[in-house]
Amino acid sequence: MVPHFFCELSQLLKATSSNTLINIILLYVVTTLLGVFPVTGILYSYFQIASSLMRMSSSVGKSKAFSTCGSHLCVVSLFYGTGLGVHLSSARTHSSQGNMIASVMYTVVTPMLNPFIYSLRNKDMKGTLGRLLRRAASCP
Figure 1 (cartoon, one colour):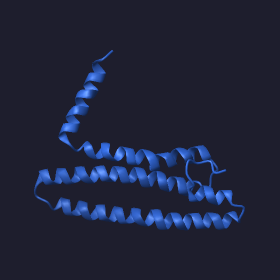
Figure 2 (cartoon, rainbow, N blue to C red):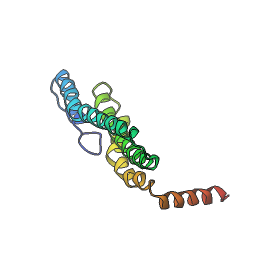
Figure 3 (tube, rainbow, N blue to C red):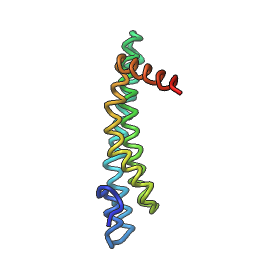
Figure 4 (tube, helix red, strand yellow):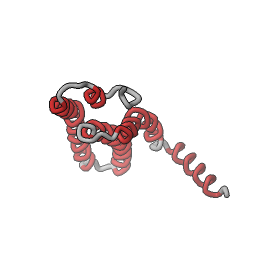
């Protein structure tokens, strides 16, 4: 039995009865290929975007661009942070409960937060959220 809500590579490798050293090496190689390389590319592209934005003369344009980049970077860091954490820590530890919670974070919570995070850039959404929070704070 795999103690997750879906079959992840790390949990499948634990369920096999093969050599654990080979499993750990395979897990690190796969995590590097599918996790570290894309994150490096994303960080490089954000460095290029930030350097281009610093050369812009319009402060309104800079603000809009940084707002968009900030929202995207928030979602990317939530997804890759929990995903890499699960895959790299599962090779060393045997805490199924912690790994399962982190797996839910990057497979369920991140896609659910995506529309909310991007809609916070909308002025109408910000105004509605502010009124809702003020109304909730004023209620006893």
